[in-house]
Image (spheres, rainbow, N blue to C red):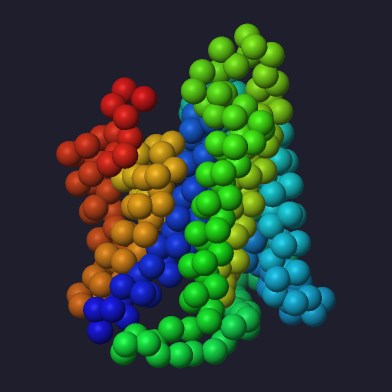
Length: 285
């Protein structure tokens, strides 16, 4: 029983990692919080539903198209809601992205109504190993999530653009002095983060369901993982996302599914009290 809970927790945690990874990257580079991030996850879910249901796209083709569309939507958010108020105040950016999130929620309700949607994911095979039931769908979620994390790590550390993004995140003034186009870097950062949000939303609809206001539930979870792991820490995002998924699955089974969100945010509060910079964060960063 514990093994099954651990496996389901890793699946849930993999989705949490993808959702919070985008938030982590945006904060690490732009030093802001994008309150429309949850709605980007929602758009990823609803886009793949629309492409598969009404246009008969195969799952993987629909997923790739959805990621591309949402990534470009992230670019629009940067150009409309973030860039015009950069340098004004953190509160201005918060309110701007929050307003954009409400626009996206109402847009989603207008297009898809408020009904929950689901899709038939690939790899429906089920097999048992050592008393633990595995599904092909669960394996797909975990494997693709880990591949995405690895790809982001290699991109940031091995490619020229990734190194420019890291340089901008470490010292924006120095980046400008050496000729880095910071505005262009911000565009790329929002594109990458939005694509990750879309992937998290796609996996959410494969294992649960999706509806236009789902971002309001996903965003606080992403915040919790990001804050507990350490704002801007990719390592913290991965480790805490997986641990939080496992702990939530165990807590939901042995205590109550209803109180799972409260359990997550209690962990966040305790972490803020004991280590305000997060488990993997750096003090004063």
